[in-house]
Length: 525
Image (cartoon, rainbow, N blue to C red; front, side, top):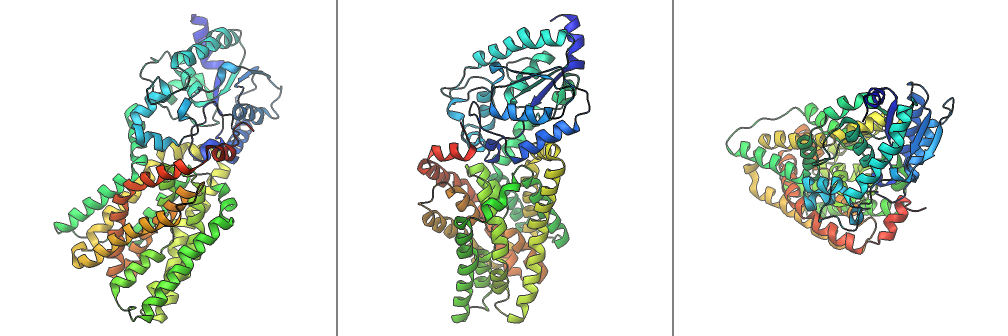
């Protein structure tokens, strides 16, 4: 590369990765599947165009693929003078073969995060029928040397609109970085990057740190289980303390908010109104708890703390951790979130009835405190993130991609701090009962939805992860140690049992129709 070319690059060359696509919505790899932008992706592209104040472009090179062309059209709308738009097939994303339309987290867990990234950036025996890395590199290098550099050298201001691995590869070429040992970068969607900023942008990347963060997220259940065991160890050796409820609530609310930054929550109402979401929720979180508490009263068991603790676990609405579980097990994510949101409303009265079964006068208090906790840890974070995504769609998504692991770590911190304050050895039978409930819920749910197809994994995750976190807080606020005790034991058991979620998810995936996934993401439309 000539010195004149090097001097021109930082000033008049810009790279743009397309906005988020429909495959991002369900955490799947798009590759050469021609999928459109999702709602956030369109908002990101519009924001990028309206927020661009770096001057007009002379020429824009864009991939042939729908999501890149749509991004380019939205970014360039209203730009004066309008730049020349050149569609170049060499800018298409790499063909990822059998990885295409598969869940990213499932692949990372199956092959390991390091091997997954090697497959995405090089050749790997785990990826079959895809585009060989040398062929991919040759076409990008050809575009770079034959088309891009001459345009830049002529003094034109050039924008390239393409895909994650194309933009990352071009960035490495521009900076002269080694191509071997390449790893996934965290370049944001729909943010126009000047070549002059690439040293700073890519310089902040770290292979081991990026892979560590992904490892924490996809192995969330191990992190939570280790936190529970560590807290249990502290309790056993006599290190006991109780964290104020306000801090517990703040931790849960923050974890929810961070976890939702990577979810297309704008689409939640579309799923929350579906009959195949609403009716299972009414049965599981409404009618069943009411029937169980009625049976307990009929048999005179309403004064037995362990019975009420078990009923509280069965009555608790779905926890937001179900969204992470769905994301990492290969679910569609949004149905799980819809179940969380709907069950949090449907389950309010049943949970209050269970908690106040021993004294009917206490039901209004439990209803009020449960409403406040769900509002603070579910609905308020949802509303805040929704507002952030609407106002700052690029920055919010960027934060989520880079910091999603913090949601897992915050939940682990909650569990770690909760365990030493409950004296877990005080009521071993109740603890064993909570473990038994965790096992029973998994088995019964797996049997009940065995015939489900498209939403099977989301049903399973949402129905088997009741919000035991808020039960810990309710137990503290109401001085009902049995509630806190059984909820903490349930969290430990659920974290360990989550390792088996992949067994059900694999079975569900085998029953699913790949054509349904293609229709869902709009591939080839």
